[in-house]
Structure formats: C-alpha cells, structure tokens
Image 1 (spheres, helix red, strand yellow):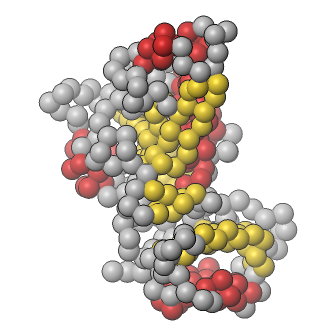
Image 2 (tube, one colour):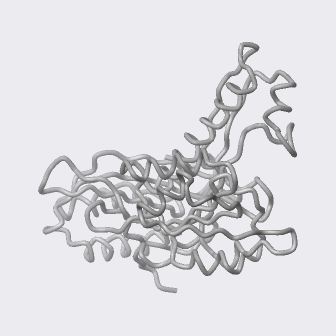
Length: 320
C-alpha cells in the first residue's frame, strides 16, 4: 500500500487503520514568511516519541506553537497533535512528507497526517439533506463567509425544492450543483449518489432522513458525518420534539458522529446540550434544538478538517 497520499485523492475512511499522510487546507500564520502546519500522530507508545517529533520539526527550522498528547492509561498507544510554523523555502512540502514518513516508519505509526495552510487543497465534500433546511442553510452560510474550510462539490436531496426557493437560488448563484433524487423504500438511489460523490473526501448528512446501507458505506469507503437531535432514544418516530416538549424535558442536545452500519451508533465527534424550561413554548423549544444541531454539526466538521479527530478503540474518538 502506498504510504504517502495527497488530500486531492480519496480521503480514506475513519475506521481504516492503514498509515496515511495527507496534505490539507488550513489557516495562515501572521508572519508573511512563515507558514502554519498541523501534524497528527498515532502509533504504539514508547519512550522518545515526543523528542523525535520535536527534533523532526526543529531540524528543518520549524517552531512548535502547541502540542496535545494523549496516552491512555494501561494501553500501549500514543496520540499527538502538533501545530507549528515553518519556512516553506527551508522546508519544502515534498521534504516534509518524506521526513514525517521516515518518522512514521521508525515508530510503526498507524497514522501520520500533515496539514499545511497555503499549499494544500481544501476538503471536497458532498452534502445530503432532506426537507429540513436549517443545517444545510447554516453550512452554506458558513461556507460563503469562509468559516467552513471545505469546497462543496454538490448538494443532494430526496426532497424537491422549487426553483425560487432561497436554497436553490443560493446554489445556482454560487454554481454548486443540486441533485434531487426521489427515494422510495425499495430504491434509495444509492448507486446514483455514489456516482455524484465519487470525487469527494467525505460526506455530510445535514438532517438527511434516509438510512445509508452498509453496501453504500463500504463502497464509498470514506468518512460520513451525521447530525441528529439529542432526544434519542427516549423520543423516536414522528415529531420527537413535540413528544419531548409534552414530556417536560429540561435538557436537550445534539450529537454529531461518524456513520456506521449500526444506526446512530458511530463514533461521536461532538455533542452539545442546552437547558429548556416551563417558560419555553413548542416554537422556542424547536428553535433551541435546531440551533444546537447547527452548531454541533459545524463544530464537528471544523474539528475534522483541523485534524482534531482520531480513532480510539473500536467505537470511540480522541478529539484534541
């Protein structure tokens, strides 16, 4: 297997354990002569890893701005995320790949991922949505404002939207393809979706109310990020917000997670909660719930793009 890849090729799935080294989009250093970089490392634990990581960066004139390290108790595994600045003329991008690749071989790394702000492409994503627009609209707004470090290649929906709706007008104005695919219980149109998202790095389900099959997930082979309200599992089925409101709940939330074959049980990336009270009516209750979903999904995507999310054990994550 090739050990070094660029992000413009398909981004391997979260659950795959093979070594990877990518070039990703990031943010710019305040110094015009220095470039900001991020490196994450996952390998068996042993003495000297931090020293060698620091030496790798310092030996090329780089300077570490911050580092997060996690070594689980009684487990022989090491996780780190380092932010650093460097001069790209003194440390060319190709040399950086080679240096971190050599380091990963020394420590038998499972994962070694590099992100450089000015030299690497953004993630290419596809967004799947249904009738509810709140998460989709929020992502489009953040993308327009430059606060979502991705390129949106397409929006796919099983709900038809009129040509004069604000979503369709926005997509047309920004030349983002929109695909309406009517689905039924017998035909989820997964083959067509796979063709449309072939060149994406990961997918986002912005309240897409269809279950993706195991065949779809295995064929796609890359990460899929989902968002759902925090009213599960107590309030399932139709209109869960009204069920929760009528039950007088005092705490609501939202969860963003990776999609797996087991429904709503993938590794969690982000969770948010908010209190509600007897003073809330159904409208304010729903508004608070939807606002949590917007924030939680955007935070999860941001963490993923900033290389803050690493696999931990079978169904957990390390989020730096």
